[in-house]
Length: 294
Image (cartoon, rainbow, N blue to C red; front, side, top):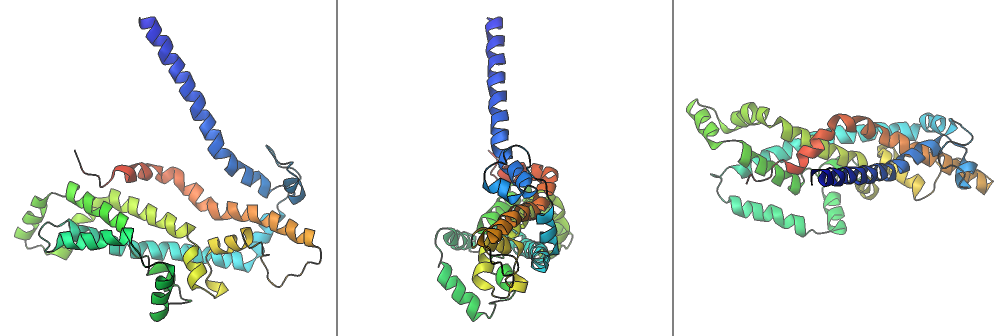
């Protein structure tokens, strides 16, 4: 019986390992292909000859990317939007989540119902555009930062975390010592919520880094474009990096676009790929953090 169980366990481990390796290659190959295509000759990529190794190794695509001022400016804009937007998100989400976690808050259930209502029903794109226009935020950086200052889903996660992990006796003791609500939140709640802050920072920062649709709606000044919007213009609209560039040969234009788009994908994804191994544990925490303890 023990031998049969051992054979069954070994077979299960073998099949499980094969499936895990297969899934790894399925997910890793698209990233690998983009990297080898970015350093291959565009003609080799277009004809489908690039599969496992680069063909016609070249670095002109990266040279063109880093020589282009629009790309460098877009990179700087994306970094600014990510850092500033994440700070605004944390400054709004954490206090809101803590406030709604307080059981002595009057009308807490009604406020939660109003917040939850916005998760299921929204005005849509046109009313959102009209609000931004009437607030005179069009073509400003604040049009990308203020409308999405808080995610209700993240706020609910924060509220559940504070309810489950911060004992109410701590507030009562701090009140005896003369601690006010704001001081209690800054000096006691935040230091005890480092895991929550890390998760919220990660979620918001990745969202800002990958965002382009808000810029597409609200920005007309090319100097304010984030990197992802410039990448979108090349991948979808098939426009060259320099609008003033004229190429008589259509195949040469298409070759240049093909050469640039893979390099741009690598350049725009590189910071996230570098940071991910160091913060992947926070993704696991983000699945369970704020959940109700059973």
